[in-house]
Image (cartoon, rainbow, N blue to C red; front, side, top):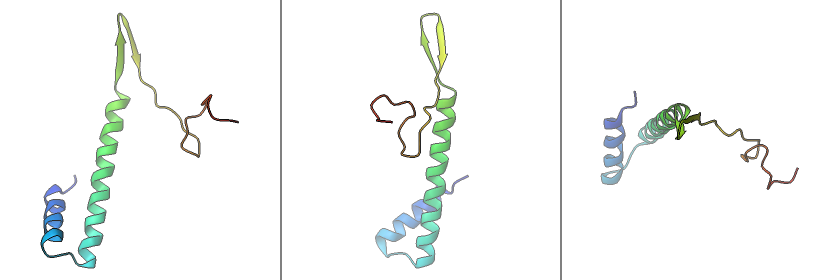
Length: 79
């Protein structure tokens, strides 16, 4: 679980008086953990999302991406 109270405390302290190098490192680590948590939760929700059209229920599929971050099989990208 991400410590939101600590993230908020460090943000307030940063605005008011500044942070030490150790606090800056802790803040960066906490922020990264929070972002990773949000992204993980979103991916989980999307993995369990269906599109319903009439009587047809279709599960959404993730788009696979190549090394450039482009969807594979993209007709607009030259091979």
